[in-house]
Length: 82
Image (cartoon, rainbow, N blue to C red; front, side, top):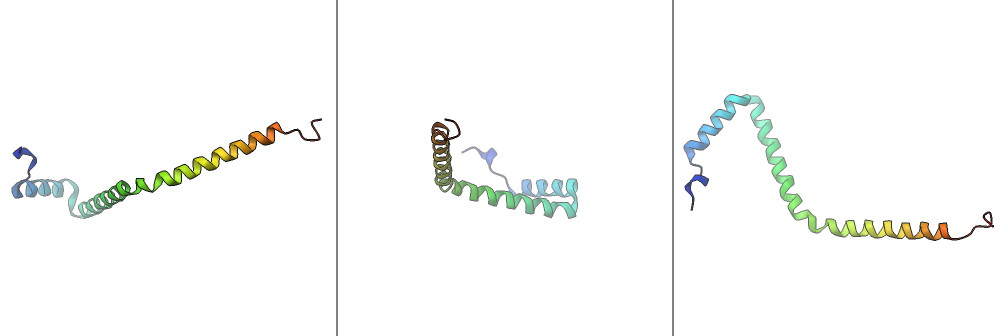
């Protein structure tokens, strides 16, 4: 395997130190918390698509039914039109 993909302890410490210098001790925990929430939502989103198509199909079916009803109503003659 390619050894460039693996990050050692010294590299992690260097990256952490640079982040601490750039963003400061107060802002860094907030940023990491936000990153953690984003990753969590992304993982949940990967599992959720199996549920979404069922809802989307139901919504599409309802809109098609509504369109058919509207077409039927337009095509029927009312007493006022005669």
